[in-house]
Length: 129
Image (cartoon, rainbow, N blue to C red; front, side, top):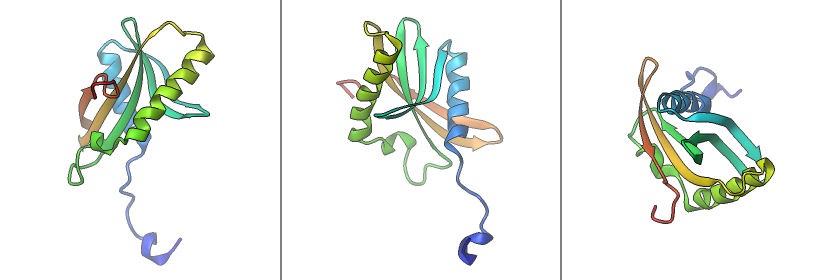
């Protein structure tokens, strides 16, 4: 460890922390969580859940502050395209090929003592996004 970083406090919030907030929110909204941090050859999806009759692939983006912009602004077109490939992998492996699918984004901004501001962007990666 270099001298310049040795005494600095840890300021990076783990992705898992943001995902924890997102899962609690989704469960309160009635979603059934199927997978967390699901990995395949095409990449990683943060959360896979069921919302009524729809299979939802969720990207979770978080920030501790908004000084550098809102979390959802960090999602690239490449990430959006990759989610379709990831969904195809998941559907083929779970034999749910005729299932309705949606791609959502959950933006999490930490607000202090175990609190966060969440914004749920439904169909965030759809053709009209």
